[in-house]
Image (tube, rainbow, N blue to C red):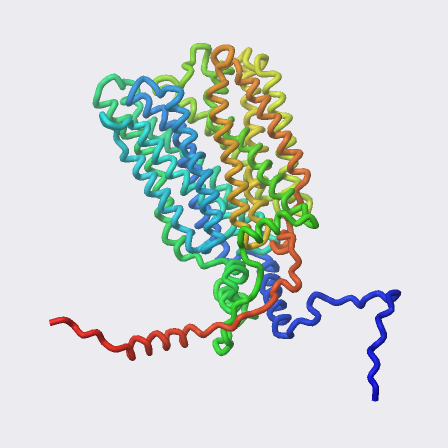
Length: 572
């Protein structure tokens, strides 16, 4: 019987909708659902466990040291200048202060990329070893006829900066990927707040050693007393090694994050096993009889990177990257411009008197510098961190609102301090008004973009690029710090000693305003899963699976090969 071909489809009928999971093998669908169930279990943790607190403590110890090493140089440079000359030259002071941000820039890019390539765990602790080694070498550094001490210190501070830079993406991503959505912001804020404690501890240590050796400082013209001051700056810098040594062992024992194991190693059985062991989620049990498999999921590559950020249908991805990086850069221009140059700003205000030296030296102002650092720490720095920790996960708070508020307040405060600088420098009472405004600026730095620019890049983008992108954003911030420090020290005396400081504060206000504009285009990340913030569809994320030989079977093959291979005859 003649078979007629089927009639052509009616063009008036719409094609039937097909779900992304339709026409896929049932096994792959189940693996995709297992992956999403595992990630959902991580997100639905309501309170931090003992394991979470351990991870946060270990990460915070690194940030404590980072801040201590960065800000201890302020007082240490004064002592170094007094021992090896009346004071440091402007170029030497600049070199010591920008050496660490320069190292940060390269460390953040390199370790951020490396953590996405070979793992968070494998790199966690390596950067701490670099910090310990470089800090110790600074404390025992010496000069000679062939090499200058300042050059040696700058070299080791760059190396130390590489380690500190690596700590930013690693700590942020590890804490972020282990945390649940309800407490992720608080845990990351607690880690970053250790920076404020490190800054405070650097000041306290400086006050203690300066007070203990006050007699040597006041009679510094004799050689033995100069030796005492030489001990002081080495002690102040070397103390930065202590918390690192305590945290080093714990960093090497932190397990790999579940998301890295799942999406980059593609080992779903190991991810479920880790969750059951470390996070006490009993519903995930490791089945030793299950054949090991490797998931087929999107993998990091240059081509995939270009496709991900260059997708015209998801232009918000590249916009988010640019705005997150620019908000960090614009903030660090103001943060480091003010934080590392407090003495110069207050000297231009005549707070230390009209005859204060252009560069601080031991007999004049070291105790005053420490006292004012303590005032700024207790009056603005620590309260800002506490307020951020309390509000960052609240429904009426969140990262986006805090960052918008912080940039707005900083812009207004910097405009007021810039335009009223000369009036506020007239009397002691008006100078105290400036100090109060400075404390408010410190408060809104930390209850604002100093915390949130660290948190938000660690929550956005897919696991395969999350650490890389955080490193890019952090490196943009350190680029701003370098530009800020170089520009400040080169321009502050334009038109006369300290005459351009008020204009620099106005320039900082312009950059904080641009940070406010960039923040407007970012999304709120509070109470959202990391997968939701990756801007990728999660249903159908697993496209296949490849069976793997069990590890025991592989070992049997190796043992059989070694025992069955002919022995080589030894020569006589």
